[in-house]
Length: 413
Image (cartoon, rainbow, N blue to C red):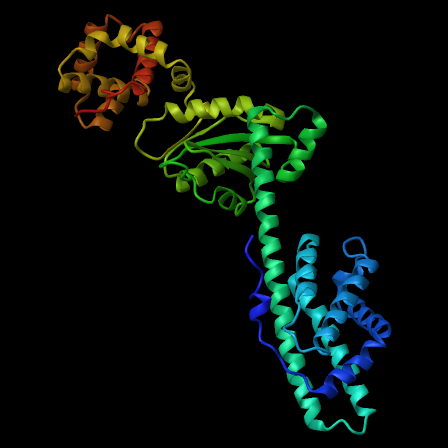
């Protein structure tokens, strides 16, 4: 942990006039009354401190007393200031969630009350020259700067520690959600509360590959979705970024896919919709299958419902490879240009809904050329495009071919 503030031994020494120390010593004798006045003003001026569930009256009184005692002590001695009181206050209030502006306001109230008490005491002493009060004011303002700086540094350091601890706890809870490490409904409900997600609703899991080791495939994912009213919780691993996404209704899926499509830097798979957080591990499995089924090398987004056949091939890659070789083996043995032309035409034909005219329009050739290529493909595979079973096998083989190294199914015109 970093050291808060300068080394006390190196803090500047302020030499106090004996009269200042004497007057402040008299104020110290009335410290209990001063504490009461400060607390009364704090409660009157700062709404946050009126909530006794956060900072109790006993806690507030102890803090005011300790800080005033410390301030008075600084004004009655010459050593460098001991700033442990503002340091403790800053860290404690950060852990309680007190706004920093309210703490600094309370400090200003305390210093103002102390200065008023010093002035009142000085006025009762006819021997106290005005120059002495000017000197005292300089010391008090210097002390205000030292205290508020120490408090602010301590507060921000404690707040950063809390933020990191919260992030670690949140990450661990997301991990448990993905791995099925949440044993019962009560724990699941607590996890949902921590992650700010409903424990029942409309959910999907998003799996995004990392473009580099431990790099986000969807940068600032949670903020990106939150900007459109979509809640989520994410975790980053060396090779994958995973998120649970809470949708308000099923109709929000297209919006999610649009947001993902604009933001992803690599392949992203989206699971089918599910309705209970306890089913997250299975949804993650489907999302990863979709992600791995997409062609590598370029950002893309797909949901399970859009690519079920491709996902099926990804679930059993060895069997998918064997299927591609069995159905398309004779085509795969052709020279590269012929092979790519026939497979590209077949793929375009499927995408065109089996229309030779639409296929020709998509690949910029005459419909009769499309029909000729398809006849060649049927001859090589022994499967007729008029046979539904053969058509299903050819489509499955094409999808399986996408997963094989050196996919030869790209279109050649």
